[in-house]
Length: 458
Image (cartoon, rainbow, N blue to C red; front, side, top):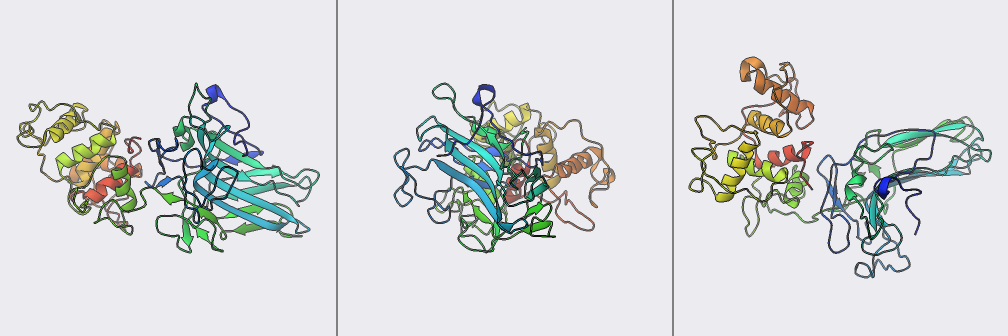
């Protein structure tokens, strides 16, 4: 097994390797799931779209290969039959026939990986993102070449033999058993000083198998959705594609792997093709909601308007308050174990104690009233610590301005949109927010996943 990191820094908690003269870094991932007691790795990683990917263990679509101590055709059991390297996500591409003589090659590898520092044993697990190109050979000695990929680029110079050395950026953690375990959140890339991956880019054509975002490179000419820097692998430099050809580009032949966490739909009324399937499964997998009915069959009721008491529970659990505080029953006139459940009462009172809501007026909370899109913007902005209200420009949405909603509501709604949590209800022109429309349970899941904090606390 190839060791993944070349050197360790402060307490072996953050590790990175950079080879190349220049590079740009881009997006990061958003959240990491709980550790799976069966293998010691996180159950999932989540990107900024709410997509959660688990370790890819499917023998076919994950392109698992046999290795000493691991038989992909046999049941995967840790540690007796377990791969020494696993992938939450990967995307690869390569060029053949590079350089003036047409003999060179360059391989691109983008991935979020799990591996072991020394051996397949408990406590030795680590995770990290990888951006790797090359080595690239067959080029013009001494010439400079730029390599562009979906998450960034780097520039390197060919040596006297026409080889640009392998470029590799890795960011994550390595353990030091038995003293230190891996901090799996480091692989998210927050604060990274090197190129990392995120969001997870999916195979577009041909359509991947259900439950996967790629087919593992089984079919040729696969295309992928664009990343922050595009959907291509491109090399630019003297005679890179042959004499007089200074640019080569491909946006096909991608080999992509990724297995969606929670492969089967959790709710009968939220099938795989539901527009909010990813976000609803994300909030359910995070323990934020069990749906609107435990069933059988379990239901989520994605189109039902969300009530103020439901909103309080969603928001509290998304901020990590999974067990409601004791219900006092004297914070609001209409909130007590007689009007709502004891759990809802505790969540609502804690919600108010955080300063996120002062109720609906006259000492009441109005637990059964529906929440409008304007109110939801204020609730989430308050949870993000946005106070006082930002200034109202009045020109972002055709139906939002100080005259219609008041300066405070207008400022919160505009900031809510500027943070990328919503683009409104209509693109336009004119763009509309629909501030008086009720928020559905499906939209609530979308808002929570898109919010930078609280983002589904791991």
